[in-house]
Image 1 (cartoon, rainbow, N blue to C red):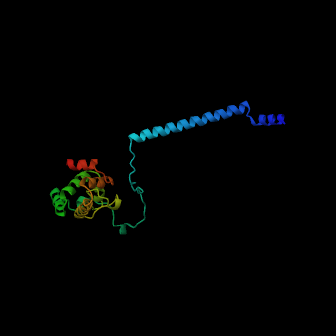
Image 2 (cartoon, rainbow, N blue to C red):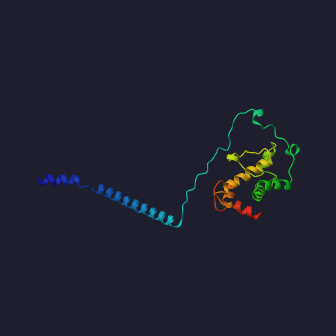
Image 3 (spheres, one colour):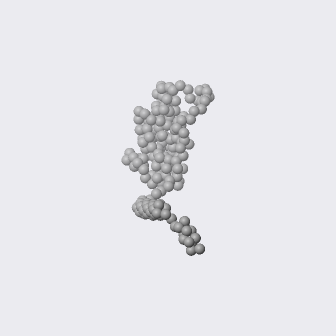
Length: 197
């Protein structure tokens, strides 16, 4: 009986090779636990000195959308020289229109930042001029980057209305940053440039 118990014990007791394998696995487990706790400690120390702010996502639109349309129904025909068909407004006339609509000093400065009041050689306002339209304020209604106004007066009215609506719940800095970046920020380079004019 005693011999049978000893034989059973020999079959249960691991061999030297099995003991080495068990030891190696145990060592690996200890190393993994130490590495994991070290990484967790490092992450906690990093988080102690840094803050992570999750911002609302910016809605991205596809850069190009292709639709089929007839040129007669789209309202846009061949680009024409803007100066030949439409009367160019002087700076005094533009300022008078902006002042008449209210918020004139804000609208005038936004126009200066966006297009140099229509004098910059390139930009969105030049795109609109090719179609006998205007957009010296870089105003993209509903995020439409191809948006143009039919007249300068319409653009002044729309931009003035937008700023008046925003200023009911935001500071001028926040409204300027929202206008330029699409995000409400306390301060941004656009607002600093606005005040530097």
